[in-house]
Structure formats: structure tokens, C-alpha cells
Image (cartoon, rainbow, N blue to C red):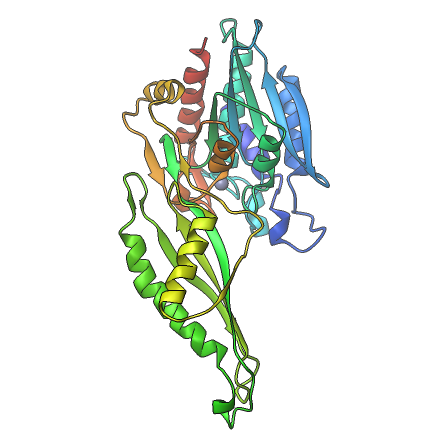
Length: 375
Ligand SMILES: [Zn+2]
């Protein structure tokens, strides 16, 4: 068994489900056990370890490999420590047919294991970068509100390149979509169901809005195309309105998931929606359904460190993905960011999440090759 596999198996056995998905004080909730364990392992390997407290009992784990000479550049390795929910069998790592099964195997404890093992091996080498500092940040809360990456950038932390760990099948990703959740609500006038002409039906108004969003607006978005990401999209994912059949409903609310292309902002989307509704004589209040909007990622593939990482992984062109992650939060904080890691996103969040052990090892080796060649 390789060091990478051993570390990954140990991480799977330590539940770190995002507390947002569990009842209060649930024993599987929170990143603390994983962060404490990694702190011990990283300190033993000679890294400088610190916790960055973000929420009660929830911290980012920071581990640095300092160069012997003055720091001239910093590389950030940034996977997240939290996972989505799992049944209890998924906390028992299982090795089968060249795969390791368990919650977080690919999303994204596989990246944690590959990145840290590469860093440990680098720390043990005689010839390692003389002026490049390498910082590992195990981030909390990626699966919910990205409080970890937001807190890291809020401290003013800067790096010359962030490699954000997500299961990309070891492809270097420079673009991903953003995600904006908006609540749209209509107001009506309640009346007895026997005399609906005396009221104003908020559900009916909303039905027309839903239709407008799913037809005209969706068509409008299909014309907006990004070379790596395809088109912007809209999905009306949730609706609720009215109280009972014999009352004319005076309220209705929908939640819309709008996937953003680079350059699209919350304010811009709200403006175009307001304009569209007004043009059809429809009215709805628009409000954010999430604490913070998640903008899209678009990193210049021509940046010297990105080009260097690409050529070190043997890839010609960068790619885009449509899921959202910490990379755009770090990029918005001024750190050029790419996404890279072993595993396939198709296995993430599934009931039989797994990672290919060969790919896990290859990921560690690619990272090590890139890091050790830095000045
Ligand atoms: Zn992830």
C-alpha cells in the first residue's frame, strides 16, 4: 500500500460531513477530526502547521513548507476537508479492483491525500525549491457556503497560483460556472375560493413567470456562449404558494438556480430579470436565496505558472467544468486559480463514491514533479 492510499483510507475513516446537512451536534458533522489528524501528520513531516479558525470548532488547516532562502513565490494547494452526507458504511474504506471506496474518496479527500503526500515527499528531498513556498490549505465548508476559502482570502493571504483540489480526472481546469440562487415572490389578494373574482391569484401570476423563465429567458441564455463552458442556464427548482384550495392564494415563491458565465454578476442578473418581467407586465420581488453569490472562474491559461503546470502534467489545453468550487472564491480574492485532482466528478456525492488508486498515485506524482521543478 502506498503512502497516498494509506493517508486517504485514514481520512475516509474520519467523518467530516458538512454540518449544514446534519442535525445540530451530530457525531459525523464537522471538519475538526480530519483537521486535527492532518495537523499531527503534517507536523511530523516537518511542515509549519497552523489552524485558521473560521466558525466554532471549524477551522482551515494551514501547513507550510518554507524554502531555505527568501520567499519569491507562493504556491497554494487547496482541497476542501468537508463532504456531503453518507450512510455509515461509507466511513469504512473498502479496497476493491484497484479502487478505494468511501465518502470523500474522490470529493475531495483523494486530492487532500495526493497533495499532502506530494508535499511530504518534497519536504524529504535534498533538492527542493529554494525560493518557492508551498502552502497546503485544507479548507472547511466548501460543500455549503465556502466559508473556508472566503475566510482565507479575507485575511489578505496571497499566492501566485492556487491549485484547488477537485476530482478533474487529473485535467487542469481554468474555468467553471458560477451559481446564483434567487427567490422570486409574487403577491396577490386573498379571497374566498367561491368568489375568486374578488381576489388576485399569486400562484397564477407565478405560473406565468415560471413559463417565461423556462422558455423565453432560457432561450435568451442559450445565446450566451463561453468557449470552455457552453451556455448560461436557468432552472426553476422549487415552488410554493397558497394555503388551501378554498382560498385565493396571496403569495407564491420560487427559487431559481442561475448558472453564471464569467463576467456575469448578481446585480446584472437581477437587472435583466426585472427588465424581462416588466416587459411582460409581470411583477415579482427578487431576493438572494444564499448568503453569498458564487461567481464564475476564468483564469488566463497563458499565465506563466499555469503554462508551467500544464506542460508538467503533459496537457496542451485547459478545460472548463460546469460545477462550482472554491477556485472562483480564491480567484476573486486575487489568487490565480486552477482546479486539479484525481477522481471523476461523476462519482462525487454518490452512494458508492470511489477513486481509482492508480489515478490517485499518478496525481501525487504529477504534483510532486511540478513542485520539485520550481525555483
Ligand atoms: Zn468537492
